Length: 503
Image (cartoon, rainbow, N blue to C red; front, side, top):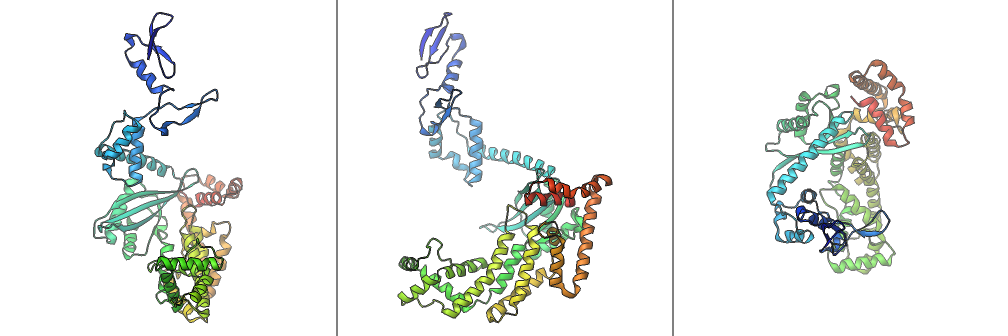
């Protein structure tokens, strides 16, 4: 700094970096100098990371002033620790503190207790935001739950809410991931679930709960029906996880593996057995002009779709495997022509289940309307292959059909109602499917379905806090509302759901 007098005779200082001048009288203390140092545009930065360029009002490029906000820094640090599962002691590591001090010499280091309190404050703030979001949701809330055991055998229960937000978007939020002590009986799970729902104040707004097929979940659902305010006395409350049922069905069919499948498994093990074999297989792939990036897939016994992916990848590299058989005398597990034909049939059969699983597992679109057509596809596929001339496929389809009948012998009414509201299907698809499945009793089953559909609608209509005239007007104007919406399929579905399923 250079000291000099201004035109009024006051002492002023001139910055040697940016030539800015400010009053430096003793009565002003060092405040002016400190404020200028913080905003000095000619300040020399100690790290290239802060040399961020921006444009000023005249369009010239200049350095952005270095303004360090300690509160924002602590919040970002707390979020990073929570997001990346870092230990709280991270903030006390000497190396990390050295990095922070280098970036900003004035930084105030925090302890693990302080950062823990910061994380808890952020959690409380986000929880309040989520609570307000749930209160503004116009309709009922569907929940999903699952249990999980840690490596130390501690039990945890998760709870996720699915709802339509006020701005017509599909919302999904994790409400809880909570420790649950043993025993994990139906009564204990129901008590824990009720407690979690009451914490969020949504126990009177639950539409359904989706669970896997554990026996304790069945007893939990029966207990919850008495504690919650449910539609139709809880007839549509329990929804079994479709992806889990599909997994059980296919696992049942794959209990007895065909010899051809075993040979493919041995082929993959052989090709992945050593680095030399991997290189030899890649040379065979290049020789037959196939893409090598896809790679052979090894299956996992607990995941049926991995078996499908293994067969699919083997069929893709069939020519390479045949070439390897001709050039490697030790490669003795390659399937013969008849076995390759059987593998192709099995893979084609399992591909349907793979596609249905992917459809059920979507997270960014509604899946309730996909249940009915996909379950119908699986039912008809099993019926077709139960009469197959292929012994293995026939045996597989028969076993899978037994498991199918256990869970899906009758169509889920609430899922069939969802497909009625899908503009691509409507009631005509339900009528066609019932005739395909129930045959002689189709008319009777269809009449029962329609009665349940209208009964459910009337229950929602009577509980809607609007006048009868206004409600009738909304129903009459439903087509107009849909027409005014954009062509987005999601908006059409949500409009119908709010008209018919919201309270």
